[in-house]
Image 1 (spheres, rainbow, N blue to C red):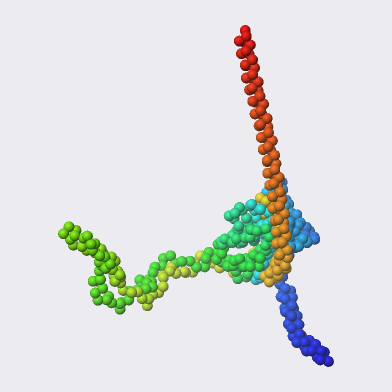
Image 2: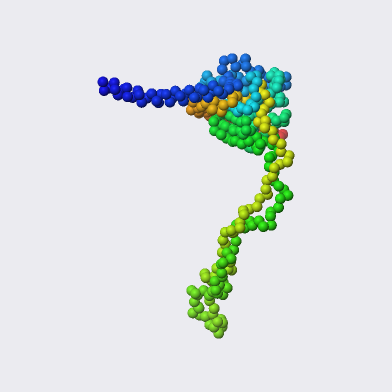
Length: 435
């Protein structure tokens, strides 16, 4: 009976906790049900029916191809994306999506990319396209509404592009955003809100944020400096002033700069008749503090450093729809790469940053497995490089020995020929002597 009573008591205490958990899960489900997933691509079975490979640059022999793979190392071998697979080529592929507008709603664009290759130079960004697009001709000259993602070239360029289109003109973000450069999967997220503020996240961590009004040169600035303004005559910008109540101590000006060295002694062999009157050398006077100056006190009339004031810009004309892109109809990948090997995956377009964050956390549940797979692949690669280097050294040594043997053989034959010629000369000399 006591055991039953204890179990009953525990059950009563667990009921509120269970209800709390159910309520929390229900709130999550309601939240996600209210958000809209416009497009989500994990490149699972059937992905080819949704994507169209472009023929752009194909007639010139410059069009690359994509392959469906998880890459050389991954956290989940079954989690595949599409990978650029031909060096020094242009890659273009797009998918048609349900048309949508971001007016009065948050836009979230997110995807993952893994640069397995030493890319040398090339892009890894994606684009959102508006209007009609001939997907078979989709390429670098196709207009877009948003371009977002990394662009690498050498050791200097590690740029993270955010380019927005406004009234038919492309505007790059003014900030110098940096992308990741290692060979693991990274998520890039761009969030654009109805108040024209934005956030850029990398692996769910905010890399930067700001406003379309200040971080793009789309509209003239709201405020400008009043170039004709002048500092008022009564503006006091002296932070400290001389203390008017400070008084110079009596006799201050009589303190000598130098005094005779109190430690100096007249030499025993000093002859005043011959050497003159002995005087000790002068040394700095420790009591002398320099010219007297009044001490400084804070200026009670200090107004701060004067700055040119800002005024309303007469050329600024607000556009409440500044953040609104043209209705989006397509998402596309269009890049050029010197070295291929980039895996694009987990493309998401929605209006809920929380859902996008959840996707990153879901994929990154296998983050450690991917790192381990990469480290193992690196061990194999380094072992292969060391083996190739060893074989190259052996082959080089073999060729050097062969060249050395040939040289010795040629030298030996040359010496033999010389001796033969020398011996024949001596024989003919003897013959002439006998004649």
